[in-house]
Image (cartoon, rainbow, N blue to C red; front, side, top):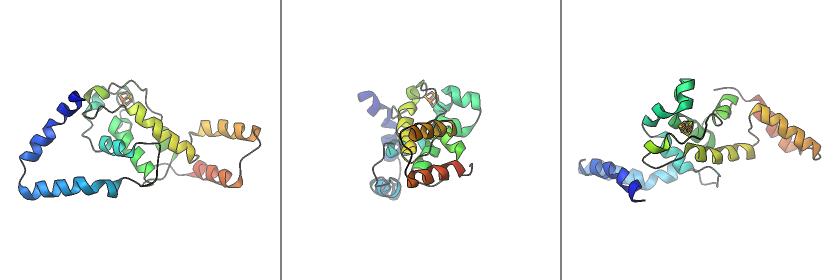
Amino acid sequence: MLEKIKKQFWMIDALLKTDFTTKKQLVTNFLTAKKKYIPKEKRDANIDSLLKCALCPNMCRFDCPVSMAEKSESSSPAGKMKIAYFLETGKIQPSESAIDLMYKDVNCDACKQWCPFGFSIGELLIGVRNDLVKAFLLLKELNKVFMDIDNALGGLSERERDKRAESDNSPDI
Ligand code: SF4
């Protein structure tokens, strides 16, 4: 806990160096941000943590094997969290590539050692995947497996079938 607080000292230091108007603005934003950016409905994903990670300078990306192998900003730790946040808040279409990105993680926690919040991207992604599965937004390969299981258990309701068909047809980002 003490380690976590120590990592955030730079914020207090930076805040103390700003003028009164900026301080006031920062404190107001801090107190009202939750209402604006965190959805009210209950989710499995920790939206507050997703957002904090998404807004971070993402310096941990240089230690991320997935980011290195893919050579893309969206597969970096904060890149994935940005897409996760947009998916959770409906700001982007749940495309196949966006859903696929939520599984592009080896859960190594290499990024965690650099994180001022001590976030584990692997853990944060579990909540996001749960929410996607609940909305029938699955990897194409998994969708077929789930369909087979559902059919074997007596089939899906019409509403569930429509939702899955929608997720199958969503465009790529
Ligand atoms: S836990 Fe995931 S995001 Fe973090 S370094 Fe490993 S692969 Fe990259």
